Image (cartoon, rainbow, N blue to C red; front, side, top):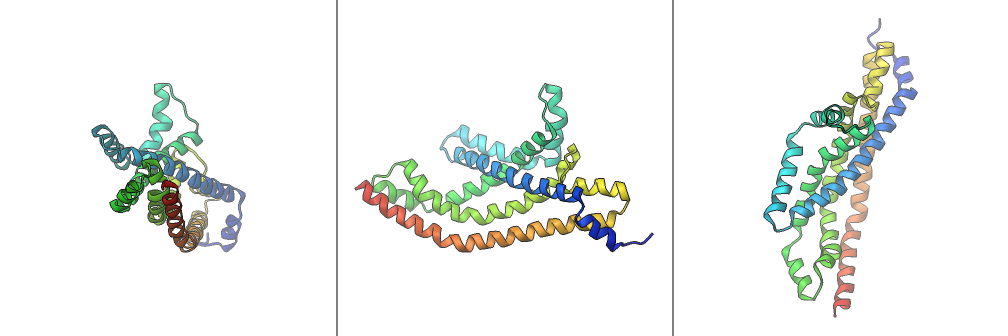
Length: 237
C-alpha cells in the first residue's frame, strides 16, 4: 500500500462529504461568531455599569466560560442537560456551546475597546448637552468599533478551529466528515491533508478580507465620527 496516492487526494478534494462538511464549518463559524459578538457586547455593557452586582456578574461570566473547556461545555449541553429535562439537538448544542465559549473573549475585546476611548470625549460631549445614549451611539461606539475590528476579526480564526470540537457530539463538520471518509477508504493521510488545506484556505481568505476591510474603513470610521459630532453639536445648540 502506497504511503501517498495523488488520485485519492484529488478525489477527496471534491468529495461531496468533504464539501458538505466544509460548508457546515463555514456557516457554523460565521453564525456563532455573530451571536457571540451580540452576546459579548451585551455582557460588556453590563460590566461597565457602576454596580457591585453588575461587575460581579461580568467577572464571574468571563471567568467561568474562559476557564471551562469548550469540549466540556459541548458534552454538558448535549449529554448532561437531557438528565435535567432539557433536550437539545446536535445543531442547537453546537451553536449554543460555540456562542457561549466565544462570548467572554468578545466581551473582553468590547470592554477594552470602550475603555480605550478617552474620557475627555465623554466630558466634551456632556458639556454640549448630549445625552449618555447619544454619546455612546455617535461618539464612543464609532471609535471603539475601529479599535475592536482587528481583534474581532482574529476571533474568526479561533472560532473556525473550535468548530472541529463539535464532532464529539456527532455534528458532521469538516473534521468529522474527513474522519467518516477515512473510515470508508482507510486513506488517513490524504483525507487529513485535504482538511488541512481547506482550513488553511478559509483562514487565508478571511485574513485577506479582514485586511481589506480594515484599510478601507479605518478612514471611514474616523470621518463619520467627526461628521456626526459636528452635526450633533449643531443639533444640541
